[in-house]
Length: 215
Image (tube, rainbow, N blue to C red; front, top):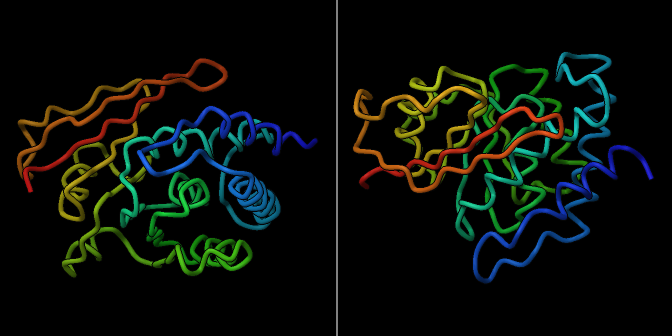
């Protein structure tokens, strides 16, 4: 068994059913995740997709956050991932949750081309749309989603403000840093719906905070 597959299976096995009526993650998700990460590994030799040094790091960087984010997303939600990069966490989330509709927003043309290649190869075209754009472009056009996610694309305060323009439900991914003070942000009233702390296999702290607006 490859290191990619073993790592993906380990993370997927730990994902509980996210909501009533949504079953546990099945074998198809593992196959899709492995296929995606194999393409990341191949394309990374030609374009800058990720700094992951080995398969174990690639699996955690690509999949770990999505296994926690998925626990807070309701069935059938329309989700936007801003600054997707090589596909984390949005593309991983699509593999884990076939009930969701994903829009992957990536401003860099080569990365957007890569994402479209994965979506086509994995036959996810009915579930996943790739937009070569910035999150600000979608917000300015008045586009709305159920859930907005981003990882390491903007400063946390800037992401929360932008995310709240895109969706009433905003996921904030953190390392060791604290969540910004919500009272000082010029966005609709926000509250914390959930706050999940976890760690990587080498003990690096991770956290996903789910914020909801008053809409």
